[in-house]
Length: 109
Image (tube, rainbow, N blue to C red):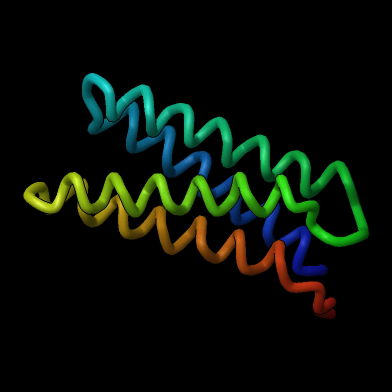
Protein backbone atom coordinates (compact mmCIF):
# COMPACT_ATOMS: atom_id res chain seq x y z
CA UNK A 1 0.00 0.00 0.00
CA UNK A 2 1.41 3.38 -0.95
CA UNK A 3 1.61 6.43 1.32
CA UNK A 4 -1.22 8.15 -0.55
CA UNK A 5 -3.62 5.33 0.35
CA UNK A 6 -2.38 5.31 3.94
CA UNK A 7 -2.88 9.08 4.07
CA UNK A 8 -6.46 8.70 2.80
CA UNK A 9 -7.23 6.08 5.44
CA UNK A 10 -5.67 8.30 8.10
CA UNK A 11 -7.87 11.23 7.00
CA UNK A 12 -10.94 8.97 7.18
CA UNK A 13 -9.95 7.97 10.73
CA UNK A 14 -9.51 11.65 11.61
CA UNK A 15 -12.95 12.39 10.15
CA UNK A 16 -14.65 9.66 12.17
CA UNK A 17 -12.85 10.65 15.38
CA UNK A 18 -13.53 14.34 14.81
CA UNK A 19 -17.24 13.93 14.09
CA UNK A 20 -17.59 11.35 16.85
CA UNK A 21 -16.06 13.62 19.46
CA UNK A 22 -18.05 16.55 18.13
CA UNK A 23 -21.33 14.71 18.55
CA UNK A 24 -20.41 13.20 21.91
CA UNK A 25 -18.67 16.08 23.67
CA UNK A 26 -18.89 19.42 21.89
CA UNK A 27 -21.42 22.19 22.35
CA UNK A 28 -22.21 25.46 20.61
CA UNK A 29 -19.59 26.83 18.24
CA UNK A 30 -17.03 24.07 18.86
CA UNK A 31 -19.64 21.51 17.70
CA UNK A 32 -20.05 23.27 14.37
CA UNK A 33 -16.31 23.80 13.92
CA UNK A 34 -15.31 20.22 14.73
CA UNK A 35 -18.12 18.80 12.61
CA UNK A 36 -16.98 20.95 9.66
CA UNK A 37 -13.38 19.82 10.23
CA UNK A 38 -14.56 16.21 10.20
CA UNK A 39 -16.23 16.76 6.84
CA UNK A 40 -13.05 18.40 5.54
CA UNK A 41 -10.97 15.41 6.69
CA UNK A 42 -13.35 13.00 4.92
CA UNK A 43 -13.18 15.12 1.76
CA UNK A 44 -9.37 15.03 1.84
CA UNK A 45 -9.50 11.24 2.16
CA UNK A 46 -11.85 10.97 -0.81
CA UNK A 47 -9.66 13.24 -2.95
CA UNK A 48 -6.55 11.25 -2.10
CA UNK A 49 -8.24 7.98 -3.03
CA UNK A 50 -10.00 9.29 -6.14
CA UNK A 51 -6.97 10.95 -7.68
CA UNK A 52 -4.46 8.12 -7.67
CA UNK A 53 -0.85 8.83 -8.51
CA UNK A 54 0.98 12.09 -8.86
CA UNK A 55 2.00 14.56 -6.25
CA UNK A 56 -0.30 16.10 -3.71
CA UNK A 57 -1.62 19.34 -5.13
CA UNK A 58 -0.87 22.54 -3.23
CA UNK A 59 -4.52 23.10 -2.31
CA UNK A 60 -4.72 19.59 -0.80
CA UNK A 61 -1.66 20.26 1.35
CA UNK A 62 -3.02 23.70 2.27
CA UNK A 63 -6.37 22.26 3.42
CA UNK A 64 -4.59 19.56 5.40
CA UNK A 65 -2.39 22.17 7.08
CA UNK A 66 -5.47 24.32 7.84
CA UNK A 67 -7.13 21.28 9.40
CA UNK A 68 -4.14 20.57 11.64
CA UNK A 69 -3.77 24.27 12.55
CA UNK A 70 -7.46 24.45 13.45
CA UNK A 71 -7.09 21.62 15.94
CA UNK A 72 -3.94 23.23 17.36
CA UNK A 73 -5.98 26.40 17.94
CA UNK A 74 -8.83 24.40 19.51
CA UNK A 75 -6.27 22.72 21.76
CA UNK A 76 -4.92 26.08 22.92
CA UNK A 77 -8.43 27.42 23.51
CA UNK A 78 -9.41 24.41 25.60
CA UNK A 79 -6.36 24.03 27.81
CA UNK A 80 -8.56 24.17 30.91
CA UNK A 81 -10.59 21.09 29.85
CA UNK A 82 -8.47 17.93 30.14
CA UNK A 83 -10.89 15.76 28.12
CA UNK A 84 -11.09 18.22 25.23
CA UNK A 85 -7.33 18.70 25.41
CA UNK A 86 -6.72 14.96 25.08
CA UNK A 87 -9.05 14.55 22.09
CA UNK A 88 -7.70 17.67 20.37
CA UNK A 89 -4.09 16.54 20.76
CA UNK A 90 -4.99 13.07 19.46
CA UNK A 91 -6.69 14.62 16.43
CA UNK A 92 -3.69 16.90 15.77
CA UNK A 93 -1.48 13.81 15.74
CA UNK A 94 -3.77 11.82 13.44
CA UNK A 95 -4.24 14.74 11.04
CA UNK A 96 -0.54 15.51 11.12
CA UNK A 97 0.20 11.90 10.23
CA UNK A 98 -2.26 12.10 7.34
CA UNK A 99 -0.65 15.27 6.07
CA UNK A 100 2.86 13.82 6.41
CA UNK A 101 1.91 10.61 4.59
CA UNK A 102 0.24 12.56 1.80
CA UNK A 103 3.31 14.73 1.29
CA UNK A 104 5.77 11.83 1.16
CA UNK A 105 5.95 9.93 -2.11
CA UNK A 106 7.69 6.78 -0.93
CA UNK A 107 5.95 3.52 -1.87
CA UNK A 108 5.69 0.72 0.67
CA UNK A 109 5.19 -2.97 -0.03
